[in-house]
Amino acid sequence: MTLTAGRRSDILSILEHALRAVEPQQAVLQHLALAGDRLTVGSRSYDLADVGRILVVGAGKAGAPMAAAVQQALGPRVAAGQVNVKHGHLAAAGNWRLRFGRAGDGAGLQPPVAATGPVVLSEAGHPTPDAAGMAGAERIAALLTGLTERDLVIVLLSGGGSALLPLPAAGVSLADYRRLTDLLLSSGADITEINTVRKHCSRLQGGRLAELAAPARVVSLILSDVVGSPLDAIASGPTAPDPTTFADAWAVLARYGLLERAPGPVIAHLRRGLSAALPDTPKPGDPLFARVHNVIVGDNLSAGRAAAARARDLGYHSLLLSSFVQGEAREVGRALAGLAQGIAAGQSDLALPACLVLGGETTVTLRGAGRGGRNQELALAAGVALGGHTLPPGAAAAVVSFGTDGTDGPTDAAGGAGADDTLARAARLGLDPRAALAANDSYPCLAALGDLLVSGPTGTNVNDLMLVMCWG
Image 1 (cartoon, rainbow, N blue to C red):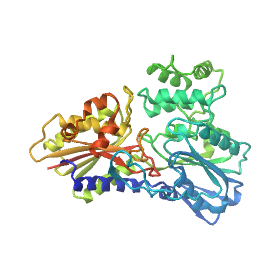
Image 2 (cartoon, helix red, strand yellow):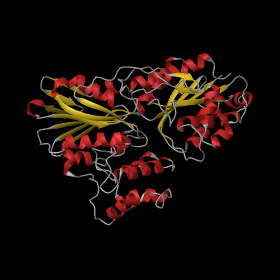
Image 3 (tube, one colour):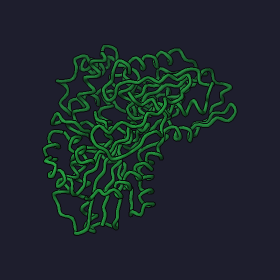
């Protein structure tokens, strides 16, 4: 068996080390410090003696531990706050347990709710926005209305923030916004394209949260879940200038054949923007952003470097190849299987045992009605590809794909592993991985093989990590 107990243990150790490197509470505290009345945030400092109210708002899967960090640093100086988090993500970070599991084994530990003082945590829907998310977004808008230049707003943003901060533009209902989100998520569009559309249908995203908070000073602490960490794309950039336009949003819908399927009010809203009947989002160079300070506190690159370092500690020849992996999940899976075959065959500068680390975020174009997620689909596709080629005698290979937030699609898994013996083991169980891929049904197949990765919510979110593992 390729994925022996020892090899599984190595994989888990590598991923666990990566997660600890991007633990949100510690990441925030590394960029936020209070000494007397002097608050330092990244490269800037603020004299709190000259600050009126301090408000904390935000959205994202890592919102709870991030808010706990602010409460730990500032305590009673925080006047009020509202942060939307995904359902089941109220806990402080660090209480997860990563393991290989089977169907039904995705329940994590049951840690206490994060201590956030006056900052209210609200659970809301992700990836499809819901009424709870909209109610929380409305409370955020209310908190930011009527502020003065003496006030300070601390904004906490992390992966999932776009769906968790739904305050649709006038004339667009929550149902319309939900339908638009569902269409985009199943279209094959990448996260930057999806957020381009959402920014132009929102009252908070695309720099509009900062616009609403003006003239108050704004500090955003950001845990990036977007490849390359562009500020305008993370959580759809509520506090960042938006280089995209209504025309760009329209082009995304056209590119994926959604102009005829998107809700009528969305199309009508975008048409008004195209005709300049509506103002576009705030752009680079707008003086508004002189009073905004955006700080990245953690990202996929940090996690990938930690994974590669842990692999070296375990005796692997390791390399972080890229944190910019994108594309259709099954195609990326096949490509990573090809890398594994080359390393296992000695056609690489990496000697065996080897661990190639990659990061990024793939997409899935839905073709069937099965269960799974992008990481599971990538892993199963890699297993199918590896099984179609013979490795040198004594060599073994596997491809692992893992969602750092602990979730992958609408399942209780975080990802999975595909190995050179996946096809053979599946055949002994009467399973057809190729048919599962065709139906986007990777979850049941990986569950039956015991090759799902499960953790429960990790409290962080910095895209996905992929490991190409080779043994001799």
